Image 1 (cartoon, helix red, strand yellow):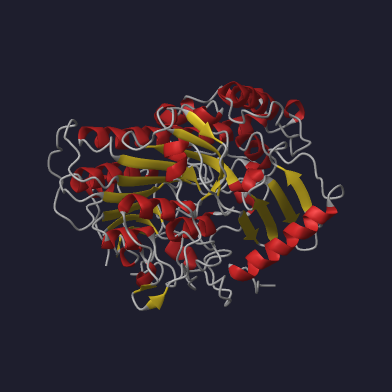
Image 2 (cartoon, one colour):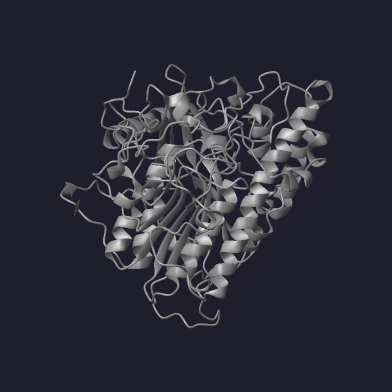
Length: 561
């Protein structure tokens, strides 16, 4: 059955509830001491893409949050979308949460492709403690089966009631309300796997754009939840700026000339701004060498490449505009003061050249719903930005986005696993506004933070299932005192890319199954420029043993071939 969706539905995400009424006065006193929690997640955002981390993209709303909150210079994730999201929601390492790789079942405990029921989500824990819970955006933590007619399904030519098993939808994992997509990659103008609650949204308006719809939906949730005295937890997971490069023309125009100067000039300018901002205030020289030998001056595709990065910037810009709307809604409702806002990214910027992927497979459509072919411009024959193209920025611009680090998404170097994180909470942050902390934190810490704020207890059993002990630690001490008793070690593994960090600043990396372990001192070498493995072999051996213990504990082993 087709569902007719009006513009009002798409932009407010009715979420099966009555309409939104007026908002309370912005000076309303906080009626409940428990803070609200708003978790905002970007997708494939680079370390230096935001203005407050050195970027040239216009992000005034996120910059304002940073200026009045805390920025984290060492906030880590799991290196890729679905593993990071599973860790974020459960407070467990991705393998413990069931998604060590992607949303396909490898029939091993840590690689089931679906978020485990032996973990609980933040929403499940907070809901039991009186919180209203809502999610907007990209889910991507449920096994997504492929169908024989996948090509037609992706193009909306056939419809099915489920995009994954509904028992693994957000509404079955603690969220009262959900408006967003079940799959990972979407057409921003006509997204596949769009759901309202549990019902497929099969038709969207002609002027639909994902980032706007998600922002408007978040505003709707805030307005509705603010009418209750109960606190709320909202998880707003934008698709932006993940490929395909889809943006509104008015946003692209703002950046049409910016990137014509090329990769090296933009990267150097970001680095200089990072130094002025004191992002790494204890290190004066931290820019890594460029990853690509290609020179801008001899690049035959510089017009296409400059435009592609302009679209990337436009996507981030529009996300920031939407966040501005969300902040206004919080302020108008009187909830901004006592709402902890956490903004982060699921991994570093992606080097993928998606136009080389086979279209019509997995989550990549090869035609629009009217049958118009979607062009994957392998020869860069068509400019990106429009719905009729699927393209990405590629490794050179990804290296710029992840300034000052080497590498990118899916790698366990800093460029893949270290991304921006901003905390804003006027009623609760005690350290100086605009503080930049070098305390090492991980995405698993969000659950522990939410538990501390809500006064909830992490369960040993939930819905009849034994629950894996929590791995994360609360970041509240950092917001209040500037320091905490953090993790002794933090581990990483994704497709045989391995790493382990210790609380004394050392990090080992094995970049591939048969590669040698590398050793870096992050206290002196944030960009991993000096491999010290040969100089300190005993340190490597010690940390490799610690990695093995961690891997066995967290279900990294046994691993798929």
